[in-house]
Amino acid sequence: MSTAKAQLEKLPRSIQFVLALGAIALAAFPLLPVEGGDFYLGMLSQMMILAIFAMSLDLLQGVTGLVSLGHAAFFGLAGYALAFVTPQDAPIALWWSLPLAAAAAGLAALVIGFFVVRTHGIYFIMVTMAFAQMVYFLFFDNKALGGSDGIYVTFRPDATALGIDLDNKLVFYYFTLVVLLALYFALRRLLFSPFGRVLAGIRVNEHRMRAVGYGTFGYKLTAFTLAGALAGVAGYLWAAQTGFVNPELMGFHMSAHAIMMVILGGMGNFAGAIVGAFAFEYVMHVFKDLTKHWQLLMGGFIVLVVIVAPRGLLGLVERFTKRGEKA
Amino acid sequence: MSDPLLSAKNLTKRFGGLAAVNDVSVDLHRGRIHAVIGPNGAGKSTLTNLLSGDLPPTSGQIRLNGENITGRSPERIARQGLGRSYQKTNIFLPFTVWDNVRLAAQSRERHAAFNPLHWFSAASRLTNVNQRCERALELAGLTARASNVAAAISHGEQRQLEIAMTLATEPTVLLLDEPLAGMGAAEAESMVALLQRLKGEHAIMLVEHDMDAVFALAEVLTVMVNGQVIASGTPEQIRNDAGVQAAYLGEEH
Image (cartoon, rainbow over all chains, first blue to last red; front, side, top):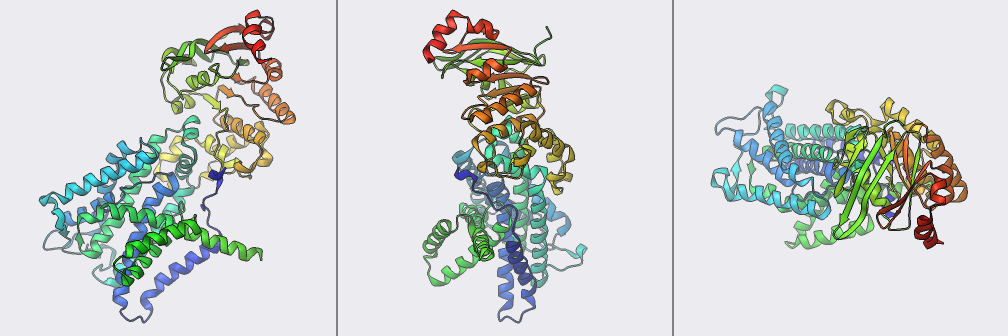
């Protein structure tokens, strides 16, 4: 009965405490006198954006049990959406372009999801990858869509309606942090809502869900669409921050990295996705500084974590704090 | 006699050349337990799967409350009032007993899941669902186990949980596939008592190997061998049927 191995859904106090510390550290970081602070500010913003992306995948992978190997397609599409609507000579308003980009990604997910959520297991993995490759090459081979070079996002979105200036790195940093936290708490609520419970039921035993009367197709399609739209929020922020989009954003590596982030941190509770995104990016930077064969080390690292901590880094934290309580 | 709640006419299911179920008809009435017996491989579970929509029949017709449901998906048939339990325990092992039954009960509140306004409210606060869940647990005698993880309760209790989940959807027709399988004597006794209680409100089809239970419970018996019905009638008629004795009882004993 190994299927009974409980996932960390409800977060124990110890983990909540660690997470709160992390959030405080993120909020306080810009106030610290760090040398090269601007560089780290950008890097942390990027990690937070990837954390949003990883959370959106966790809704499928950890909660619903749908391992998508094409999730980056929606991340990239929203980035392109921002690039397309931003004119050459002026910034575009954030208040409508962000929802638009997310909706575009969500719409693409709805269409692709209509075909892929009918499949199960290994077939789901293959079909999501196939669709993402189609989107990738649609942009890669199409000069009108920027081709292999990609497109510049000439201006960062204009958020004066919110009274903030996203061109300022510090402001962008805090804006991203607020979006990350807001989405995290919203997804946590969703997890324990009637809808979230159905998704968890589908992960554990879809056959039984249908037998008691759930039309699982509709639930899975809704989850796929929502996850696509949320990946779109991340992709939009990424394009806004870097000022540049190219097909690699929708590529296989991007999708695979997101899966590894979710596994690394611990699946099915969104907190793990955040922790995993930060850990993955951090370790990647460390390895990249060491050697240009960093992917070799990365592979070994992931294998090690999966063996030592099958429930991810959060599972590891829980295990150690539990041991502490018993002692 | 009143119209049957569920009526299957001339059901056949072929897997390649093999007719697992061959021209079988059953009528299920409220207040009656209709037992289906037969040796292993007789097609009892396949018949259950046909009635619940888990498998589409090759030919034949199924009517539930007078409506033709042949070929409909299992989830639609379930929503129209048919509940089934499985021969092989089919539950949500990592969830608590309460969450297993609560999830089954929630299947009747579709708007709660799909309305985005409900996406930020806790599922555990759906009062209707909680009440239905409590009732089902009480009926199945599992109230004391509510907070236990389903994987950690005894086999007999898992069988009870199967029933509780089915009851939480408030079905009118119950298909129970070997609810007594692998149960100890005491557990079996309480399960028989439970089925006796359920009989009043439901039309029940009981697939079961335990002959003591079958003859204690059933008003009607159908005997299947090799996908075909060889006899159907009251327990008395079945007991005295020469064909049944030769084909079934003789083979088993």
